[in-house]
Image (tube, rainbow over all chains, first blue to last red; front, side, top):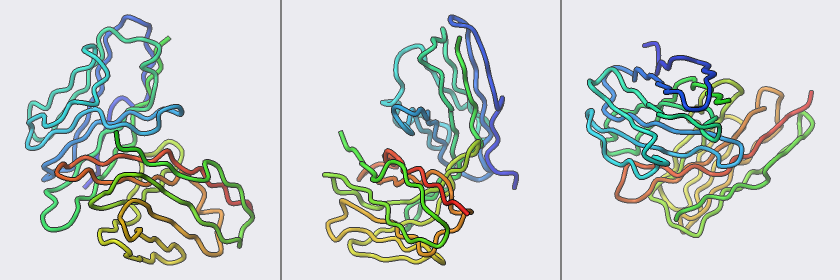
Length: 116
Length: 111
């Protein structure tokens, strides 16, 4: 398997523009997570899905952020309008059903977003 | 709010030295994971510990979960330049599938 795939790897945009980040999870994984990483705040969970359904979006910073998972192989994180403080590395991770053991998260390579 | 504090924040050592990284919280976690992240990549899982007092070894790395499941440590013996990276602990929030990540320890091993 190719692992979790994210695109684009780098995105530079101007304040006020719409930004869409994309993620393809590992095939067969039931859970998908979106994280944001900054030097100041570390790695923060934004939202996670189970079987394409959003379970917990309490980490989404504000209404400018939205996430969708239209099918098991694709998810998007959208920021509209973008602001300079949204600059960060955004990671997508997926995991199989945990079963009897805690689940393992497999992270993608991340999208580095810069908003000028 | 559950927080995981890691110490030290930065560590620069010579090849062959030993080191310990700590992960502390006032909250109890049902399990705890350690990840290593290299520049330009996502975190990669090293180990998961579940039982209070549990010790796991991965080659030169030794992981321990505190008896009360509030803290953990990572000990590296005879560090090598390939151990360089950002080490993150992550605690599982009971009753959910969420993990809270620690503040991170950035390790640099000099040849």
